[in-house]
Image 1 (cartoon, rainbow, N blue to C red):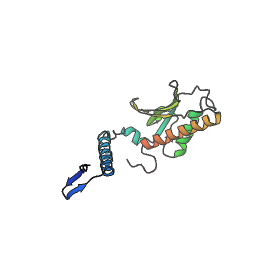
Image 2: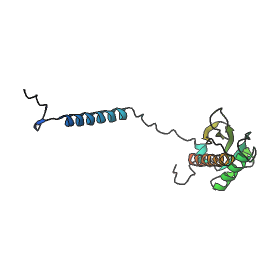
Image 3: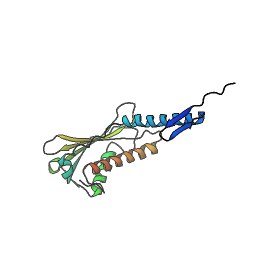
Length: 178
C-alpha cells in the first residue's frame, strides 16, 4: 500500500510536518485571532463628555420644588421623596437651601414618573433660576419589588443615587475636580 503524502508547513525556518492536532490547533488560533479583531473593530468610539452648564457648577443656593408623588406602592405619603431629598441636600453641606425660588441659583424639580409596565423612575429637572431654562435632567429608576419593606428600601436607595448623581454633576462630590 502506498504511503499517504505527508502535509508539511514551509516556513522561513524550514519544512515542518503537520499532523491533524497541529492543523486543528492552528485553525483554532486563527479563528480566535480573527474573532478578536472583528470584535475590536465593532467597538464604538467613546464620545467625549459634553460640558456641564456653568450655572450648575457654580450653584451654591438651591430651591427644591415638590411635584408630589401619587403612588400606593411606597409608604410615607406624597411628600416623602421631597422631604428626604430636601434633608439630604441640606445635610450634604454642599448647598444652601433657599426658601423661595427667586433667592436660588438653581431650581430643582423632583418628580416620580410611572411610564407604564417598567419601574417607577425619579426625575430631577434642573432649571436656571435667572433664565428659567431647563439645564439638565437626571433619571434614576426604582428597582421593582414585591414586598412593602423592599419597595421602601428601593425607594430610599434610588433617591440616594439621584442625590449622588446630582452632586457629581455639580462638581460637589468627593474626588470630583471641575
